[in-house]
Amino acid sequence: MNLYEELCSITGAKHVLQNEPMSGHTTFRIGGPADFFVMPSDTEEIRQIAALCRRESVPYYVVGNGSNLLVGDRGYRGVIVQVFKNMNHISVDNGKICAQAGALLSKVAAAAYEAGLTGLEFASGIPGTLGGAVRMNAGAYGGEMKQVLESAEVLTPEGEVLAIPEKEMKMGYRTSIVSRMDYIVLGATLALEPGDKQEIRARMDELKEKRVAKQPLEYGSAGSTFKRPEGYFAGKLIEDAGLRGFRVGNAQVSEKHCGFVINRGGATAAEVVELMDEVVRRVEETSGVRLEPEVKRIGEF
Image (cartoon, rainbow, N blue to C red; front, top):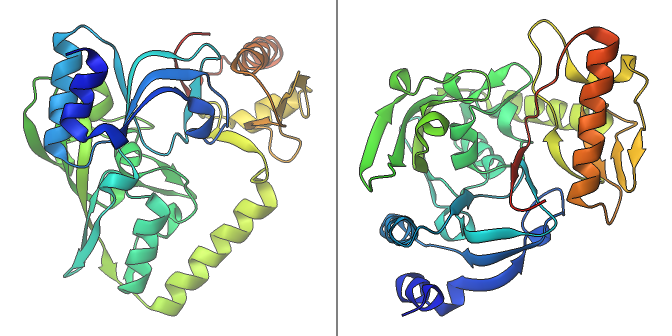
């Protein structure tokens, strides 16, 4: 069998797409075609896909909602494994939430609210999936995943399923043992506290208003484009460098929030990269601080 046939034998043909444009699977709305785009439904399918790719020396990359991702204009040579809508179950029991990696973080936060559980309000507007949030220790407005994570279930490159308690996850600023060891998050258990539903809703609404007021939600983007340098804010450094509204083609530093690079419509990955490189150069020139991208880049540019 060829690779396509083998992937179909694992997930079923309807869950395997060929030459699939990645612009439809990233919040940037940018990206050329992936050779294969596979949507597994359970752990065993993910294990078999990863094993097949390793055996055949085919690159593979796991995505969720594509919210922190820039895919090259020439696409991705290999297999994109999307852990998203086919693996998004959420359950709540006795103050704990168990959810599969493909569950949207906003949906997990909504489930916490419905159960009267507090601690996850900060995540209600984050556009990514639980798997990505655990992998990068996502955070906002003073909260981060390490504060609520009890344990994560992961798949190792060798095909072993591990349950890792939070204290062994080595979670730091936008990092964890998952990213360091190239594990695949399968699901997680979050431990929350009982709270007042009205107060939880009020906090969620407050944070939503802040996002709408300060972030360019009407445009495609990958969220915060650069990591926060220690002792600084990336957006402030970019603004101070005179780059508010700076454009390369249809890629632009947001006029609303300089920490975001936005797709004004039809932007290419090449334009985004050129813009980011110029931002890094100008910020270092004006402040002496070298910005590091938070957005992950994959594929051929």
